[in-house]
Image (cartoon, rainbow, N blue to C red; front, side, top):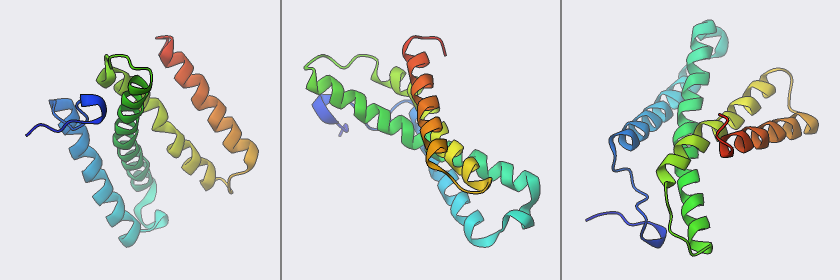
Length: 137
């Protein structure tokens, strides 16, 4: 039985790249959970912190690609157009959107987030999404 999404467009992970991303995101979630419960930043050192941030990015990448895919399907359904290149678009926008939680987390480590920092990160994300939409990135 094939998984059909909104508007008859396939939302489940069928291609090899989709399966690899799903496996990587689930694995990152489990390793992050273990790291958060059993280690501390001072205990794991610089390499452990790098691994932590990498795992956060991989997890956010999986969520962002899936979220982009749902967004593009809903957008196509609202416009009553055919949903073309949804996978391709989600793989272009996903890595850019997955950077936002990482930027927020890094900003939090330097003494807390202020409103202007969140606004600056949102502006950077909008700029990066604009550049992706114009095929610059």
